[in-house]
Length: 351
Image (cartoon, rainbow, N blue to C red; front, side, top):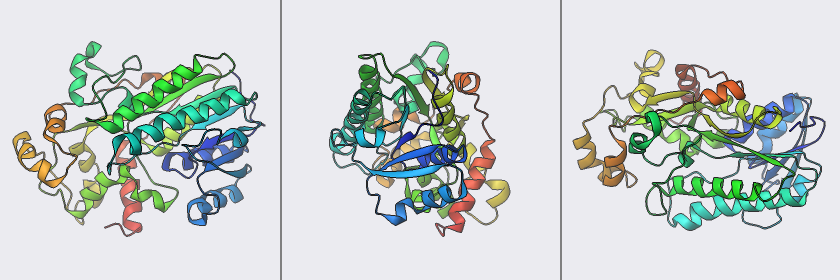
């Protein structure tokens, strides 16, 4: 599916952490970006994008949209051959999993793709899903072929009552594939990132969920040690490039695990030690699982005993070869990503 770069491109959730870097790339390529946002009049949210547009060849147009409103994206999509759907909730502060996570993810995806069905110019939709749509708990790795996560695997262990965020990503992505398969005009390419790190273009994003782990590394709250928790990470700049490629490479198709490293909380912390170890109380060791089991639920309500049982002590191992071969992604070193993120948080006065 060949996409005309002279046509405008729609980006939903354009003020978001990942979307900001994608918008930057598009603008630098001279592309007109239709930025779908909740409030185009909120200068604090959109100013960083306006500043980017001033420095680049591309053009930027804002459209007021709402994930939960039917037909909300049709106007913003007019004239676009390519749609990037990046908007989705990501938070651990959940009161009602269905209302806070599932509905915005699933219904939002449905509303965007139903607009794609209405707008005849659309040829391709790129959806930002997650590795959470591939697995729910680290223990799931044991039931995969070859003990590795690949694009063929779907998360079957999450529900509204356990790993609700992961469940919302599964249901949203399945909704996308279901809608795509009911028509033949536009194709669907899906990006499945692991935990996203890297500097934010808008300092408001520093409050997002992805920065909470690094905040705990720097503020001393987990200085005694971290759980033995396997995790995948990807730099936001590499992820934005993967999105760009997924949109414009004619042969791009299907799902793509976009994860730079199979790592762990301790390895992430160790990456910061050379530059920041003398000034900040970084954790230097892993705590035994029995200690996490005893005190984890008391310190963090998200550290349930079920989560600890199914995640602590198990690695994360994913195959990112498709993103390297098909999307031509080159992943930057973990230390570079960690240092750039941590340094920005220091400059922003987080610590």
